[in-house]
Every structure is written in C-alpha cells, then in structure tokens.
Length: 414
Image (cartoon, rainbow, N blue to C red; front, side):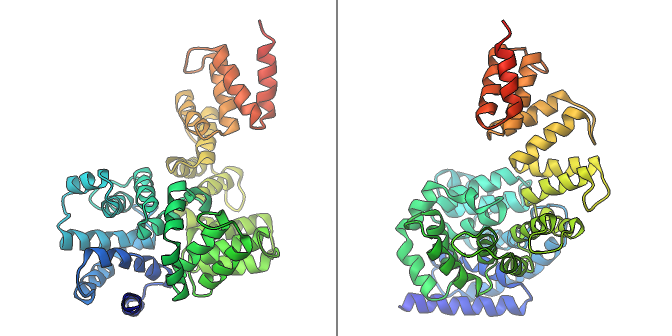
C-alpha cells in the first residue's frame, strides 16, 4: 500500500507540473508511464530529478512539435529527447555504443532509449523501422513506456498483438488490475486490450468495452480511439456513428493520429456525417504529418484522384513514399504502381519491382501478380515461367482474379 500511495503522489506531482507547463492530457500520461522505470533506476525521491526533466521538456518539446523536419515526431515522440537527456545525465549513458551493447544484451531500458534516439533523430539519424523494432523488443519484455510509444507509431492496434507481449501482460495482470483500480487510465486501457484480443484473459468484447470506457472517461486518447472504433464497427456494443465520431474527436483534439485518420475515413465515406473529402483531407494531413502510414497512403490516394484536393501525381508519390518507407504494404504497392506507370515520377521498372517485392513479402495480391508479370516477361530479371506461375498462384489464392486468369493462361502454354 505504501508503494501505491507513493506512486499516486508521484502521479499527482508530475501531472500538476506538466499541466502548469501547458502540456495536453495524453502526453502527460504517456510520460507518466516512465515512473515505473524511474522506481527501478532512481533510488530516491523523484522530486530531486523532476525540475531538470521539466526544464528539458519545456525547452525541447514545444519547438520540436512545431518542426516538420521529422514527420513522425509526435508530442510523445518529442518527449524522447527529455528522456534521453535525463538518462544521459543521471545514468552516464551518453555513449551510443554503450547503449547499443546494452540493448543487444536485452536491457529493455537501453532498447527504449536507443529507439527514442532513432525515432526523434536525437544523436542518431531518424529511422522509423529501427525505432519500431526496438520498441517492440522492449515492450515484449514489459517496458511500459516503450509499449505506449509503440502504439503511437504503428498503424493499428492489431500490429502490437505479439505473443511475447501477451504472455508478459498475462504474467503481470494483477499489477495492472491494482493500477486500474487506482484509476490509472493506461492500465485500464491495457486491460481492455487484453480482453479484446484474448491476451492473458479470455476474449470478451463486453469486458473490453467496460475497461475502455473507464479509461476513455479520464481523457486517455488511445482508449477514446479504440472505443470509437468499437462503436463505429459495432464490436461488443451497439453500432453508433455519432458516439464513434464524438470519441474520435476527443482523441483527435489531443493530436492522436489514429483518431484523426478515423475521422477522415468517416468524412470520406459519409458515415454519420455529410460526406466531405475536404474535411477528410484536413484531418488526414494532421495524422500524416505525424507519420501515420495509413493516413499518408490515403492522402496519396486522394491526391492521385483529386478528391478534396487538386489532383497531383507528384504529391501522391510523395505521400506514398512516406507511407512505404514506414513499411505500410498498401503504400509500397501504390508507390510501385506509380513508378511502373511513370505517374508523378520518372518511370522506373527497377524501382517499381523493388516496391512490389516489399509489398509481396507482406502478401499483397496485387504486388504478387505484378511480380509474376515481371518474371513472365523478364522485366528487370531473368524470365522464369515457374517463378511467374508460383507468384500468380499465390496471388490467386489471396483472391486476385487477374492472377487467376494469368495462371490459367500461362499454365496452358507448353
């Protein structure tokens, strides 16, 4: 009980100082997660370190959030710099090679710090893929801050349902329950996530909704967004576009990229609102500027087709490239098509093939089909009937009618 009361005092102290500095509710709670690591690293009163951290955050977060130099620098991501600086100062971890070695040995805090360095471009050149990989490593072993940041980077909740993470959550469920009963919105949201995906709990959408509601009622953006999805799709609750939109807007007001993306979809599809691609574009740009790969891909699609914006293949290519570089399969496929057709970019069969290969690795049927065509005709590779048939068959099995016809036609050729 003493530990819980101490944690609550720390929470109140951090919240009050951050709120006084003008930071929004969600980033405050994202930063709060690190208190569990502070307990392990700092043997003493957190007050001795708080002023230094707040100063670092005040000096670094606000200008970085206004900068477009790294499109995936969200408010949470910008807070990385303060975290890195404080650890560098307090723990002597100012040598990147030392951090790399510790991360390679499985030290979760070092993995988290290194991911922050990659993700924010602080010390190391920004690398989205390296950051995500390290966040996944740390979160799978229970690093709460890494887990929270990971949720802000990957396209959707389904992308962080790793078995290792599920096992860790199951093992630590009792701790989460204590924190949740003490009205910690992050713990409440994670318990909801466990019920939704059957990780550590028997799957129950009803229980998931209950926990998400508790978390969302406290203003936690991630929970508001997830609950919005459940209302929109009628998962474990009666479908309501109105409730979904209200929840998405609450999260979007905290600059939560996924919620901004979901609002854009609702306006594009006219779900519960008057259809408006102009409004969709405005929300998409907010999410895309934060590095949300699905929003970037969708924005590319709107530019390519002139929905809500003046048509521009050049702008479409730029956004598809951003999305593709973050590993989003549809962004990779669409970028391949643009290079294949020379739309908004100089035609390049070799670059098109490269992006089709990346998308094919994620089993995109269109990419598999196009690669089959490359091998059938020997574009940027030696022609290979067997390889083409293999790719056509795989694409056909995934539902591509074009690939099915191509497979049948090529099979009939002696």
